[in-house]
Amino acid sequence: MAKSKKNPPRRVPAEILRKAKEYGFSDRQLAYLWGTTEKAVRNLRKEYGIVPVYKTVDTCAAEFEAHTPYHYSTYDQENESVASARRKVIILGGGPNRIGQGIEFDYCCVHGVMALAEEGIESIMINCNPETVSTDYDTTDKLYFEPLTLEDVLNICDHEKPYGVIVGFGGQTPLKIARALEENGVPILGTSPEGIDLAEDRERFGALLRKQRIPHPKYGTAYSVNNAVLVAEQIGYPVLIRPSYVLGGRAMEICYSGDSVREYMRKAVDVSPEHPVLIDRFLEDAFEFDVDAVADGKDVLIGGIMEHIEEAGIHSGDSSCVIPPYMISEKNLEHLKAYTVKLAKALKVVGLINVQYAIKDDVVYVLEANPRASRTVPFVSKAIGIPLAKIAAKVMMGRTLEDLGVKDFDFRTLKHISVKEAVFPFSKFPRVPIFLGPEMRSTGEVMGISEAFGGAVAKAQMSAGNTLPDHGTVFISVNDSDKNDITLNIVRGFVQLGFSIVATEGTARFLGEHGIQSERVFKVNEGRPNVVDLIKDGKINLIVNTPLGEESRYDEYAIGWAAIAHKVSFITTLSAAATAVKGIERQREGNLSVRTIQEYHKEILT
Image (cartoon, rainbow, N blue to C red; front, side):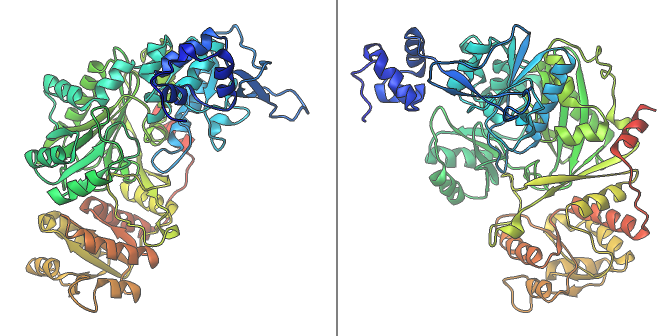
């Protein structure tokens, strides 16, 4: 059926519209076919009285009463969903899970449900993923197993008439329809769609940062191939290029030349004035930090500041990180806190906010701000003993941080160190590129807690299946900018632990000039036997390879795949190498203590 501009929906008979809905056509599809708007189709459908009813899936198979019935919509006659007269709130879930949109958002949704229950409010979940806790039979008061589209959510709101809707716990998916929901009269709880859009819109957010005098990398917005190349040249290579409104870093790429920008734009799925491509200066070799906070419109609780143990540019979901941070000056720590408070207040955040930073040459840069739940919320909450998502849900309902007794919490008083380590599926996908970047690749994460940094690192590595070696040979190849005192201290640490050192020519020469002996080995493209041959022969027990620039990524790819195939731990940053030394030291001491997380939390309160 071709799209027609001659058949506006008012001239469509009611029986045709009803039949289309019974056959499964969405309002949006019909609007496209009839050359009109989704809102016009919706209004006509409601005028005709064509609305869905909700059928019940009995989760207990009629053996006993089901306390959380599942509902699904259909265009039938009898409605089995009975709306209560209680004060109720709808939470929008994260939808189907995929790499880049993980279970962390479901954690936030479930904690939101728990908070609403504690406040005596009926919770209604809308989600369409059966493999989540939010869709379990005993989690929420009521569940609608529906797609997270504007049409489906509005239909449920029409039926339930909620006090409000929470869009900030399900990741990026619910945010995409937040403004449209508000325009249709649905009360959005927490940060307003205006605040969400202000953080997402590159031009507006940049203007906000300039007004607040907060440093940020150079950036630009492009709407075509030639425009993208021009913007990238003005900013200066390397650049980070990505679509707007994405989650999990999907379709992000680091480009080092005009040719790579053109190649990216050729693959870009949808570039238009409504969906521009965002281009940022990539701060190579910087240190990256994440901050998770909760704001009540007046005060801001800094839940935790996490230092990434990976190079800047690696997606936060893939990066190992530590809380509290261990390599930052007090001055820069105060900058992180102050900038987060400024942004939360400027965006009028009520609920959760995540801000990502990079520090390069002693300057703190804001990379982005997300006024919603982030995938680090579960990690931070468990590290500090405060359920941030629960606090955020109560704040959305009008409570204050002072009411909840968390206004003056300071994560720096923690008596333990927590390390998050990502888990990757590379061994299951032969020949997939394995080096990390801005697009999320991990499928899970683990957490190590200890009184000492080394113990937390060792526990996290064990949990992720990457137990660090306590003897053998370390292969080291560092880029020119990493040939410094930090590298020397790291290598001396390995030598003191009894490891032999194998290095590429440039690195070996640098080490030799400073009195550290090493065996030289070819790079992958220099000849045989090279480092990959040594890995295959079982002669390498740990790899430290810090690439810089486009060309050196080739070696990282080859070395990385050999490492995965032969189960050799692979480190790509000096930060991670330094933590490995600490982890091995603690691991060799033995007696890593095991305590419950509740015991650690009890210490926070004493």
